[in-house]
Length: 344
Ligand code: GLU
Image 1 (cartoon, protein in one colour):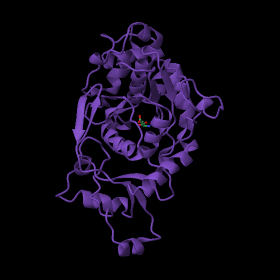
Image 2 (image 1 turned 180 degrees about the horizontal axis):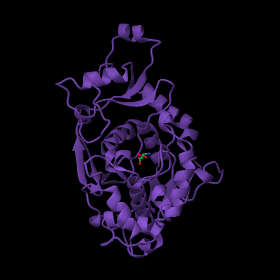
Image 3 (image 1 turned 90 degrees about the vertical axis):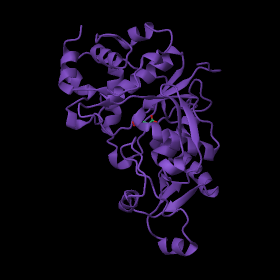
Image 4 (image 1 turned 120 degrees about the vertical axis):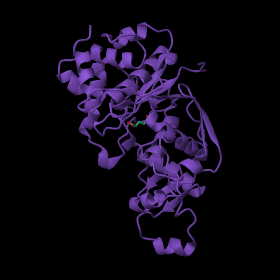
């Protein structure tokens, strides 16, 4: 890919739990791609999903990533420095909870432009309406429920009678075909109004939702390459809507990576056993074995064998995206542990 300037990528963990194999693999590929292009890599902590955030996992994630051999040019440690980050035109805290005001400015812009509206529906009401038989339900994203638009055009009377009740700001989704190109998966298109519905951008307190924060961050941090799990592919459509409503240029490249799933076909989770990187480390598995496993399951090396991040970097001139499979990787925890413990 030709860039006028070296690309800027990001690792964007949410500190909601320990790093597991799936996240680690996405981060490895995001890291490798940027390092092979001589770009700048940011570590951004996405800590605004308040009920799920566990603050201890921030340092734990940083330690685990470092132990694996990944590095970054700017991260939360230098986030409050007054020195401009190299390649960035001004200093930006790389922790979302330090940037709430900036997100609120953008929310205000959307409120003034009437691109968002107040939605008074409770989660239960949304789910009940969305599961009515005539409503379509997106299948790709586990927790996505299409909002049926109940509060989209409330009359002034209805607005008035709802005043004082809790609400969320919802983004108006356009009824038009939205298209973009994924570097791994090829052309993507859908009509967001039909498939996704209007989505939440912030709480009534102004606390932003992920979709708003990530768009503002990627723009402010001049991120040009987004590499992440394909559970976020529908979010990319949402984010492109927000980018366009705010008049912000989207990142140039998106790569949505296959997920790791359990033998039952469901996304890798606790029910499939312990796939936290730190647990393998405690079992005595080396970082090179883990990097080898993640590289092997993403097509970068042919056999499971120990490899360091530095060795991986030396073995390619450019990111071998053509080797990365698009199908999910089935992980059987016991088998994976065996492979990891006996890796040459
Ligand atoms: N923080 C998100 C997560 O951990 C990733 C967001 C992104 O890459 O855009 O799932």
